[in-house]
Length: 157
Image 1 (cartoon, rainbow, N blue to C red):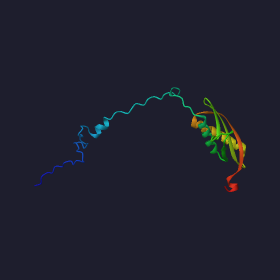
Image 2: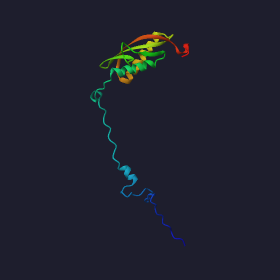
Image 3: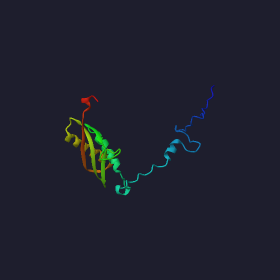
């Protein structure tokens, strides 16, 4: 005759209750109970209106750099040059008045390129990028074409 063998849980096994669920832990709670007794998620606060959140100031230098980078993204624009005497590092000039912005750019364009079409593309692209990235309204953009350089394909560069 055989005697029944009692199965004892090893220290790594958690004992199960009659329903097959993990039994109570030494602290008195099961993993299922611990999940149910977790603190509730924080309630979502309503959004604060924009006029009460504060003010964000964007320096003219930042707007100038965004405009210069955007101008370089336009096809057939080779270089965005410094503007005015002794402007170390500044490639464009931005003037801010509230949320209205006036931009001035000096650009070099590939030859042969239709200058009016290229400058209009620069105006559209720069106005869009500056507006999207800063939220400022672009009043107008002055563009001086300071150079016409051979396209990269013609001189092998």
